[in-house]
Image 1 (tube, rainbow, N blue to C red):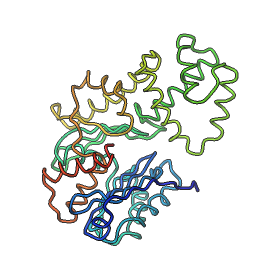
Image 2: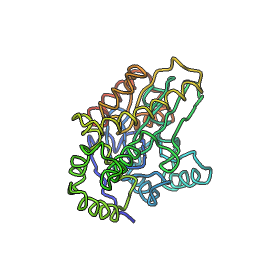
Image 3: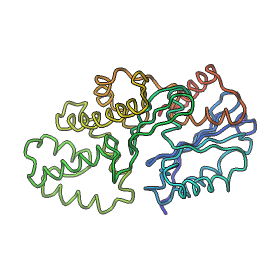
Image 4: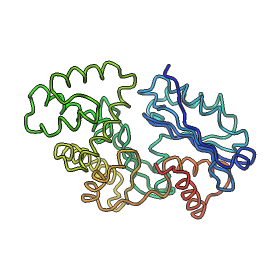
Length: 334
């Protein structure tokens, strides 16, 4: 099993650890985040760990169990949004059983994208486009109606995701190395450099295979390459810009399908996930679909909103605004 190396941040422990609080866990393919929020609006314990998507992380149960043991005893309610939840009945039951065995108080379980959608629109109607390791769109009418588009995983889909961008970049690199592509040679040296590989084709090919042979979590490592492609695109490298435009077009088609299926052509759209740190990607999608609504809460904030309701706190718009500011102050914006 891969060792876990969480980053723990604790603020105002006296008020959060001994007073009533709520907790939320946001789990994707690359990282899992636990956040505890006090009744007074103070962000308490924050723990970041590795991915917990059961479809591509064999140690997902250990990741989840480790986080659950760190939740304060004064936690009134817990909300979880974990990738893969709801995809199969058997797997979803296993996910619930892990939580039930470690947490005896009320909890709710959704997929990570549904939780992100709740956060982005504060529980109101809209289309949330999530692109991290994977990609998916989630539309809600604000009254309980839900539509999912994409989210098929790396084998069947995830077009426009960080994994897809990294995979396309590696494919382009190999075509450049063996001469199948001679038009995008400007991509070879810069991309090889950010991967820590030599730029000479023969040496680069051997180093690339050595890199591949040592991957313990291929999906996460390939997804991490998307940031480099985005940086190169923003520096003006045309092959990288083309890859990011293709990713944006795929993501845009998720919005189109979600609105079409929900008969909500006027629904606002918003976004979540690490891929959207790319201003180039956001710009291409905005040109096609108009400006996105800024998320009212980050994905884990959607979980805190669910947990607050479950705990009977009756969170209103003012609560959402205060929580949003507290999460921003804590550096929890995505």
